[in-house]
Image (cartoon, rainbow, N blue to C red; front, side):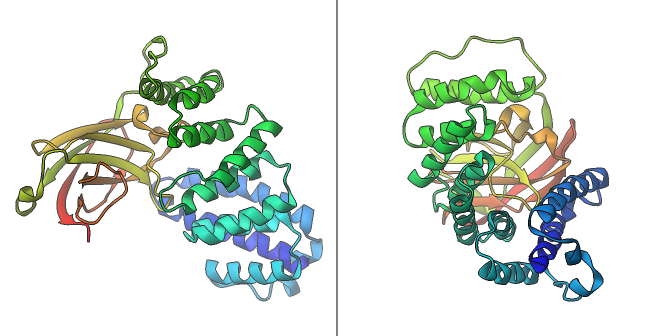
Length: 335
C-alpha cells in the first residue's frame, strides 16, 4: 500500500509535467498553479490509500525514471491491490495522457465498477469511451454512464453537455437542445454565448426557431486571425464541394478543437477569425489557453477528421492574444 501511495504521487506529477511542459516558457504562473492544485488532489489520494511511511527515503529509492516506468509500476501495484478505485482512475488519466485510449477506457471502466456513485468519475469514464471510439462518438455504454451521473447530480455541467452531444450524434437535435438549455443559467456570459450557438444549431436541425436573442457580448471578438493559402502545385486538387476547416487545439492535449471554423474551400488565400464564439465545447474556450496549435485542412468528405486525400497545412503554434495574426499554407496531401 505504501508503494501504491508513492507511485500515485510520482505518477500524478509526471502526468502533470507531461501535459503542462509545453506551457512552461510562456505561462509559468499557470503551470505552477496547476502543480499546486494537483498537489492538493494528490495529497488527498495519499491520505486515502497511503501511509506516512510511503514518503520516507527508503520507500522512494526505486523512483521511476519516466512516465512509462511509473505507469508500469502502478499497473503492478494494481495487480496486487485491484480494489483501489482512485488507483484505476489515476491509471486511466495516465493512459489518456499517453494517448492509449483503449487502455484508458478499460481503467476507467474498472474504477466505475468499484466506485459507481461518483458522478465525476462516471462522466470521466464516458469521455474515455468518446476518445476511444473510432468515430469519436459516445456509445451506448457511455450514454448509460452519463444518465447515472445526472441521476446522482442533475446539475453536473459536463455530464449534461456530453448527454446533449450524444443525443445530437444519435439524430436527436431537439432533445440535445432541450438538454443543453438549462446550462445557460449555470455558465458565465461568454460561455453562454458559445452554448447558445450550439443550441440554435441543434434547434435548426430539428426545424425549431432559434432562442430569443440576448444582449451582444464580446465573446465573438477575434482572438486569432488566420490567413490560409494553398501551394500552387495543389490548387488543381481542389474540387467543388470541398470544405476548409481551420481550428485551434490544445498544445499536447486531446485532438478535440477548442475553436473551429468550417467554410467552403473557395478562392485562396482566405482569412478566418477565431474567438470564444467558435469554441465547440462550452467547457473549454479559446481565451482560457495561452497558446494553441493552429491547423488548416481541406476535407473532401466534409469531415473534420483527416481522411486520405485531404489537403492540409503544417500546424503552427500560436499565442492566444487579440490582434495576433498567423499564416498557414496547405502544402501536403494526407496519405
